[in-house]
Image (cartoon, rainbow, N blue to C red; front, side, top):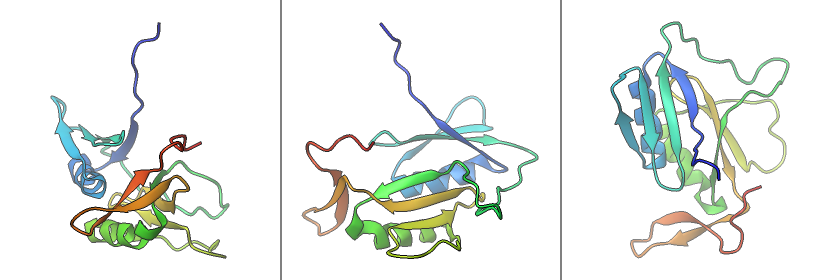
Length: 150
């Protein structure tokens, strides 16, 4: 029997609380501060679990890099019809669009930097379709039978 585990992506930042508030706003999640103020977690529905760690010597990553190498980044999946709204939300919270040289064809992925400079993308998911609630707002929901994102 295996013990229960979860994975958490930890992002370094000069100001972890500010970065945590950005991602909490983006995901509609909550910020949790434990006994160590230099380590802040963001926990939300749908499995969102991130953490921010204070790094006093933090320097933002450069992306895209000249040699076009991959770096780890968050890929946030949304329904096709929600991509523009997700972009407005991200920019409204402080994200900065990142200009890339590889922008041919339909733009089903949009690249940003968070307030601390970490890259992330908003991308169309093949398994999330929009749903309209009674208030007319659209939300991405998994399509039954297509739970595997792989």
